[in-house]
Amino acid sequence: MIFHVTLEQAEDGWIVVECPALPGCISQGKDEKEAMENIKEAIIAWLWAEDKKANTALLQQPGQQPIVVTV
Image 1: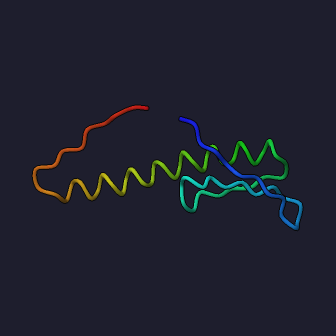
Image 2 (image 1 turned 45 degrees about the horizontal axis):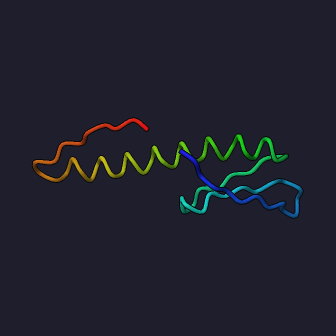
């Protein structure tokens, strides 16, 4: 998958990176390379957490069976 991110230098010199498509998915790094590595981890964690929430909701609905799709 491809996600677009924004980079912004904070007052303390750190690079803040955000993925607008995933609300609240933000990370940072000492430099651009580290920030980009960190946002990849943050995106994976964000998607995992959202999937867990959706799966929990599905399991609470009678007759619903989650099906796994790998992307």
